[in-house]
Length: 508
Image (spheres, rainbow, N blue to C red):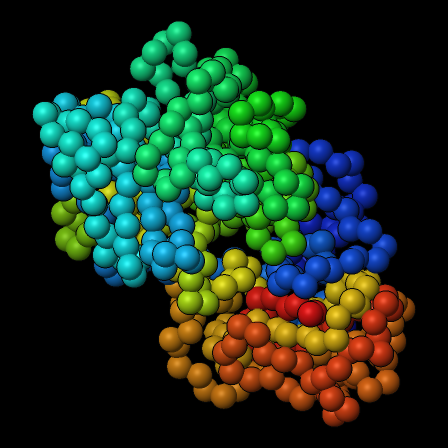
């Protein structure tokens, strides 16, 4: 890319005019415009969108970083008589901090090998997130025995579980929404509650959302800021699949239906949105958007982001976030995820990484259900590692005006491992901190006033260069690392990066 003295960040580099984007009328597929001065939380500040970015200099580009699929995949296979094929649609995987265990809820559905399966919801646990146990729960009978890991039956495809320890009712610590079609008179979204995630009680007035008001693919999330529950579903509006949202205060009464995402003229003609798995991350919302390609019947995943949960930004040129798997050697068969990928509803944060669980199919969507076959896998991404601002030689990224509320700044960055062509070409490359470091590259920060003039004592030339690979490296200058004297002021931050991937920053 040709070096320029200074340019608008979103001009040649990221492909969308920043001024035009900020001035565009809000609505689905349009991002939220930033205020004149942004009040930051103490959370990590990501570079998945343009909300914080005011401009850049030099050869800086945004990279979408793909998670690294584990070599142990698939980690769960249908090896029990009550498992025909397995699906996380989206299913749920979480890490219970109190019990120090991974927990998973997944679908076991019938196919031609095991037609006797009755659309079960199953439960599994793991100590390390890779090796899973299917405990004998003695709850649901299958072929005359309760020695299985089934917690509910008659769930057709979609399940989504929340662990909600803040609920004062102990019997509602876990909440589940699932798609029920066994009773055609009560078809739709059903909800159930549990004290432990194992013993579930259906709500007496199910369905809480009828078939006519929701698609059969959805996920639920709890927003800790608004204290509301959101249900994102494949809308019933035809002919093209798209995404709508419902809102609830109690997980039972759902209202305010509105469409939030649909394919547009920048998408390929065969693009449809099969679902959106949204989750709160730091100061914003992120989402895993299922991209259904109707010509091939394949399905892969893009990353999207939002500041309000309604207006979504299609991050990094709509590039693939989780690509399909490759065919096996000698073209004999396919990898378990070479046809479709269904990601779980939210990543699991553990040991400085994000674990993204998914079910993979080795065929396309439009097959008879009896032929379905799938397993469950996992991919890892470094903390905050969704997108990064990268530079192969020296360049800089300047934020919009932000208000300083705390006294210390930290960056999540990796230096000395950028190669020409960008950092996202090899899925998983440099994501798990295991790459060799050559010692080259650096990050420096400069604090400027709103007009872009350096503030004395906080110039880039006075900043101690940060090198290496760290999730939270403290920024300091010759006079120290305290931003206390700037508290309450509106400033801009200029990050000068060289041979570096800058993932995020935070002031706390």
